[in-house]
Length: 146
Image (cartoon, rainbow, N blue to C red; front, side):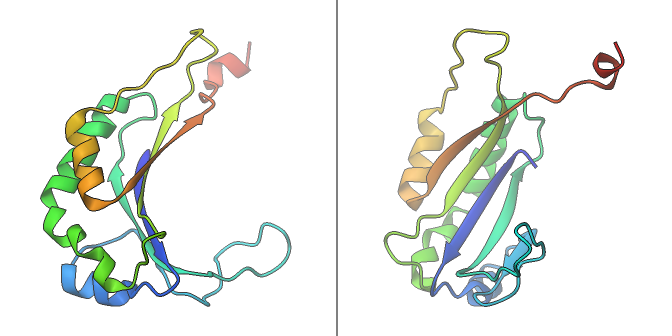
């Protein structure tokens, strides 16, 4: 998944939101549930309820397709997402669109990415944040063997 929507809140009624909107997240959790993995050796629990939606499965080096997929998702689900604050999110709990893209700084001295007005307008009207995470490009198997 190269682009996801993360919705979390301390008092977020995730079950109510999903029931009313009939949206299908790829992940859902409730405050107090155990997290599925142990990174530190301690059992961690979720401090907030939330869900995550896949917005794009385009490659990490295909930011243009990711943006198009996000615009389509937000447009198709705008009415459902517009009322999300009525399910217990407070003003500081902002749903976030997370783009994962390939870091091209090894090949170029400058990397710029463009967010078109349509995407910014949709995210702004929904009060959604946008985050862009740069990931190191995967090393091809043939490059490892040289």
